[in-house]
Length: 62
Image (cartoon, rainbow, N blue to C red; front, side, top):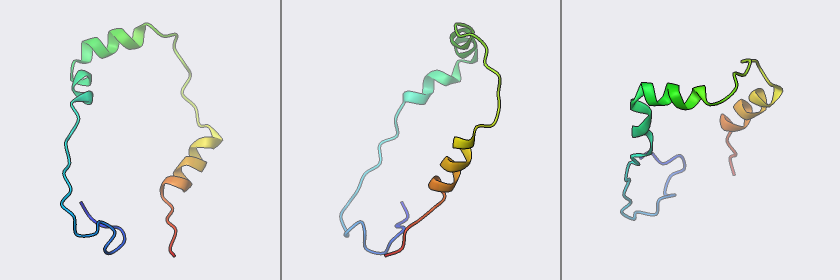
């Protein structure tokens, strides 16, 4: 892990445990069957996507 701000992790020992949640997506046939249960949607750009991009790539310096 990289600290984005020096000392924020306070010198403690932290552990990361990867989730197995995404393992179900490895079965492409099961994913396709799940997706087929929903009506198709048109892919298009929404203004909220730009707002999300701006927020997710922003930082605040104190």
